[in-house]
Structures are given as C-alpha cells and as structure tokens.
Length: 318
Image: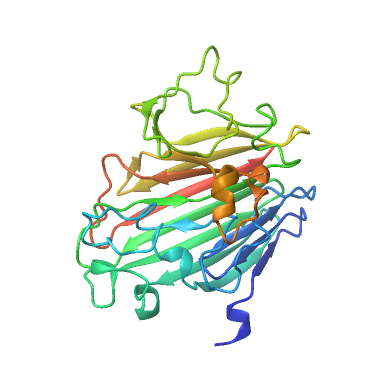
C-alpha cells in the first residue's frame, strides 16, 4: 500500500485562500482554516494520525452506532464505540477547485477490511452492507460536510445512528472558565439526557434563550439534546473564544424524500476525564467544545435496500 494512501489531503479554495485537511483514515476532517486564517476546528496535539485508532478531534464520522452499542443489539453488541467507519481507510476521489468552492469526495464500500471492524450483521459475511460517500466542500468562511449512506444489502436498516462528531476550537482556552466566551445558543425547549448524571429534563433557560445560552461550567458535560416536536434541523450559534469568535452550525438529514429529526450532542470531558484519555492533553478540555449533530432517534429511520440517507452539516465562521 502506497504511503500516499495514509497521507492527509489538503483541500484549498484558491479564490479565497480557505483550506481544509482531511485524513483518509476515517475520512476525518482535522482542520478548517478560513480565508482570514482562522482555525475553526480542534484536533488534539496527542491525536493518533497513524491509523492505530480513531482521530481525536476534527470531524470524526459516527456510524452505525453512537457511543457503546447497546447490549441487547445483537447486530452491533461488540462493535467499537461510535461504530467502525471512523477507524477505516476511505478511498480518495476527485478533487476540484473553482471560483465557487473547492472540494473532494471520499468513499467507503464495506469490503472485508472495513467489515472486519464491524460485528454481527455487519461483519464479513453478515447481512448488512452499505456504501458511504463524504463530500467536503470549502469556501471563504464555510465548510460543508455531506455524508451519503446507501443501503446496498438486502435487509432494512432500522436501528442506525449517525453523527458528525464535531470538535470546535475555543480560542484563548476559555471553554470551561468563561461562560460568555464559550456557549451554545439555539437549544431552548430541547429535551435533555444528561449522560453523566442520568438526569432527563427540558432545557428552558430564563428569558430570551439568545441571552441565556448554554455554557459548560467547570464539570464534565455529555448531554444529548432532542428537539421539540416539529423541529427537524439543528441550527445553533456557538461562541468559541474571548475575542468574539463565533460559528453557526446547521445540520439536516433526508431519507426517502422525508426530512429526519436531527438531535445535538454537547461534550467536554473536563479535567478528570481528560487525564484518562491517552490521546488527549490533560489541559486541552479548555480548548474545545464538541457540538455534534446527529440522527439518533425519531420516525422515518428506515433504510430499505437501495435507499439513501443524506446527512449534511454546514459550519460558518462569523
């Protein structure tokens, strides 16, 4: 296998100077720099970039399970956390660069190498099969990631989960210490499952939610936000630093001509959890916040043979 197979891919929009870096391992976007030279994504200094484990940072891809698989899920019960596509080498497609945007497609067909990281129905000889395509598109202040998953097997896929596990860089190390410099707006009235405490409640900040956004506080944060009835897209504003840095995040998913419900996950390990992670610096929790759009639950999550799920994330630096 040639060394280029392992090398990161640089996508540069010549017209604006914006650029992204994507590793074929997991098709993981590890950097997005705007035309003004502003880095939007966080990637740990200790991240493994040699294919030995999933990359800690950037935009890892989660499929077909989020977190550790449920013990009663016979198809996936021994699958790695967050599935296996983030820990498999993808094929690099044609790159392009024009006045409107620059981009590249990455594809993954579940051959024996990929499926050897799966389990049960997803393993070699199992009944599940799919083809994945990731388009990464870059312009002056926006990066778009579009994941297409096609069911190429003969069975319905009904219990899948998929996310963009996006790590945002918090400039100035303010993630935990400054609620003004690091927060998320746009999650008012979402249902919350706090995976650290087990609590479940509805997020109802006092007053106008744009003035009372979600801040982390000095604690481990791992929460799933499920939207209220009728809301399908994720549309949030994230403050990412002490000098007014902000990004907007929008995400949507379509399958069979129907829009699916997108949830959002907010994660920061804080100090004790950070120290337990071998590929994450002890103090790097100050430098990042994960805001992860995903298809985790809701009606319409049935991929019949031959059908597709198209999941899109748009990140804009403001």
